[in-house]
Amino acid sequence: MRKLLFALLFVSTSAFAQYECKYDGSQREMNECAIRDYKSADAGLNAAYAKKMKRLKPKHQKALRAEQRVWIQRRDARCLSKKNGEGTNVTIDYLTCLQSYTEVRTLQLR
Image 1: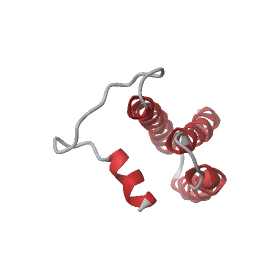
Image 2: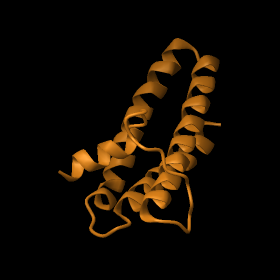
Image 3: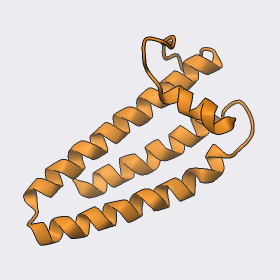
Image 4: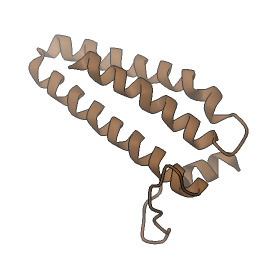
């Protein structure tokens, strides 16, 4: 059930209401901020990764791709305890964890 609810937080279609991001608002509004901030960090990481891949020779691209896959697995494992936590801030804690690691990785790739 928790996985389903978490997945629904990432669905942004017209079938679901869009909530405004307010750091001092309701839980839904704070969750929206966390979702927005993580998506922004993830987009930055994807851009930095793509830019670096373009500069590398195929041999080094393969190595970076493998390194990135391992990094994603480690990041996700490190944040898993936040995802499986208890309380109203579990979504925010999990996404903030992902965002923090993602921002550090983006700096490493640049």
